Length: 251
Image: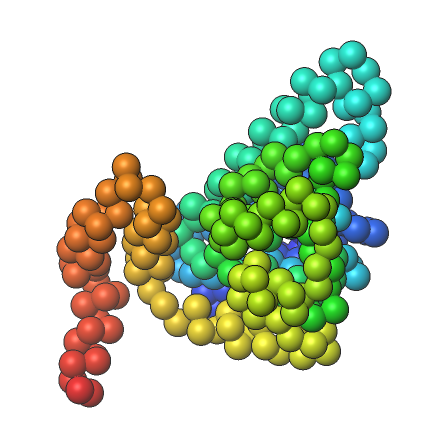
């Protein structure tokens, strides 16, 4: 379901569950195992998430949804599935590495929520992206309403979620849903360059900066105070000291 390759400090995770990389319990478990591996290995700095299918991910497995909604206890079972997806996406978001989602094709519903949990997104201009759950009388409950509003603003979230609108990569870049949109033929090469840029950053610096950025929208988390305490911690980190020393020698 997920092919794992290692390229120096980069872990490339390629989703491979034909035909649409639908998310089911087994795939969620595979992702958790991957995150266990990444978080315990200090030499990893980047998680590059991609697909070998035409579709990045179409979201929740339809067979799973059908089974959950076909029994009296189905809604409770579906809520349990959504909670599991929330937990997974929280882990991806909080991982002490840079997560890069490469969206070569469609990302819908839970698949788009998976991409939203990543730190940055690179999309093909031709890709189709959206959170169309409202068409089914549902909502993107695995973090979609929260992360989309935080990333693109309330207006864009209203537009895409309430209107169940599907947009292409170019429009997604314009509204800030993805950081870069490139022609599909050039996407892999562009993403590889982006990944290598992140791979050059020390893991401790990535983890500390991510914590401060996450705190920026929540005053109760004391983002400014975290900046001070984590900056102090980074000053004592061997890799930081080495890099700063090399910089000062060249300056």
